[in-house]
Each structure stands twice: as structure tokens, then as C-alpha cells.
Length: 357
Image (cartoon, rainbow, N blue to C red; front, top):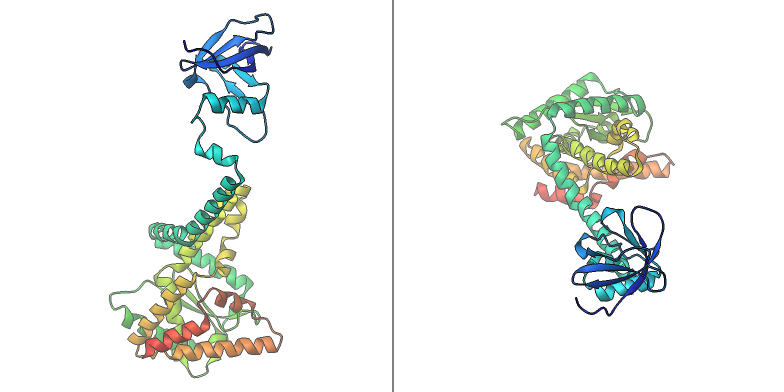
């Protein structure tokens, strides 16, 4: 046996009683030797335990130290700093880098920064990638069911029947049918155009796509540019882009994933399930999704022989409408929220003008 040069006083518990026994520890030949302390009469027989069979305590800033031995026995530190120093001298390399980092404010700060960066990366890139894959696995019937529930919820809370003449609705519907068929002669996903008007001024000139292909178009949007239904068709083309690419379901999957994580954290699943229709009604698309929908709008307008430049006029009319609302002290919160998730209006105007050249 190697000569004993480094010892540590501790309490020993044999695992059969709660009586502590004064002990002296030392390491030799790959084993922890536990002997009765020399200052007291021997109350137990010296023993040796292979180091590999000992569950050593993790070093922390506060708290005691208790090493667990086979059979329920243990040794407890009398002097915590002395225990840590003794372990560092006699068991070098035992601590993991994580444990060492926990003892340093720089290590904790670095871990916090890495955690925030990882969370941001998952939210920015990982979540959309996962949502795209999950959405591809969701049957189209699920979209249809959720879309119907969302429309019913909107009808109860924000919408009322359209006051547009039936021939106006039919003319727009037929023109949009021709436009979709022209852009997608190979076949397009099902869509269902619904005309509604808002219960108040908040919704304003608006259009939105729901899962399953339902597109809601407000009377105010049709009336925004009297006699210019090409712009209306451009807006419908944009919403059709959301339908074709299933953006709403993707957003729902993303929102559900975030809600699920929050529910795990706070233990409330009922709120997530119960508020799904409301979430759908107020959900904004990502700006990338909006750009994809704009590209689809251009595709449909070109197929119908409509210049994408009409959308520039539409956005300018929307800005005038919002200015009038603000000047008159009226509420445009719904359309304001929707536009907050879109690329800047100037960027979109430039995009459609460029597409027209």
C-alpha cells in the first residue's frame, strides 16, 4: 500500500443505524479507506470501498457534502471547504467541466448567453422547419375542420353577413376561379371564398385565409377601390398563397408547439385547447410567409393578365384609409395587427412594381 499522506476527518454512517461515528478518510490504491478517528475509541472496523462504487456529491456553493457508499452507508463532511480541497487534491479530474463552470459567474453567464442564443435559433429556424414537416403529415381534413370552427368563431365575434350585392360577389368569385385555374392548370388545392363585413370599424378592408381553404373577404376591401376589382383579385391571390402553402396550419402548429411548451412549464393544457380558434383568428403570419404569398399573388395575376402594379395602388389606398381612421379617432387595431406581421408597405409596393416590369 502507498504511504498515507493526506487524510480527512468525517462522519461515518454504517447504513444500519443513524449513529454517526468519527472517522478518518484517505485514498490509496484506488479505494477509499475509512478508519475510526484516532481521537476516539474505535466504534467500527476499518473498511475500504472502491472509488468507482462511491457516489460522490456534486460541489455546490452552499450545502453539505455526503458521499454514498454501497449498502446504504455514507460519509459526511465535517468541514465543507476542507472536503472540497481534499477531493481536489486526491481526486483530480473527477469534476466535470459543467460542475466547474457552475462555480464561476463567468461560466453561468456564458451558459445563460448560450441558452438564450439556442432558444432564439430554435424559434427562428428550428420551429418553422419542424412546423413545415409536421404540417405535411397533417391530413387535409384536419385543416377543413379547424377552418370551419375558426370561421364559426369569427362569425360569432367579429363578422356579420356581407351586404354586397349578389351579382358583385358572383362576379368576383368567377373572376377568381378563372385566375386560379389559369395559374394552376394542373389543379389547385380547394378554396372557398366567403364575403363578410366586420361588426365594427376595427376589421376594416381586410381578407384572411383559414385552414382548409376558406378565404374571408370583407365588404370594406371591395369598396376600398370602387371599380378596381383587379386589386381585389390580387389580394385574393395573396390569400390563396397562404391556402396553397398551408401557412395557417403551419402557424397553428408553431403556436401550438410554443403553447405546449408553456403548458408543460405551467401545467395548464385546457387553456391551449380552448383558445385554439381565437389564436387562429388573431394569428399573424411570418414575414417570410407573407413574401411567399405575395409571390403567389403575382403568379396568379400574371396568369389572369393583370398587372401586379394594381397592388401598389391597393397599398396606397390602405395607407390613406388608415390615415383617415387615425385622423377621425377611429379604431383600426385589427388591420394594424395584421400589417404589423407583413413586410413594410414600401417594400411590398416596390416588389409589386418590380414584378410589373
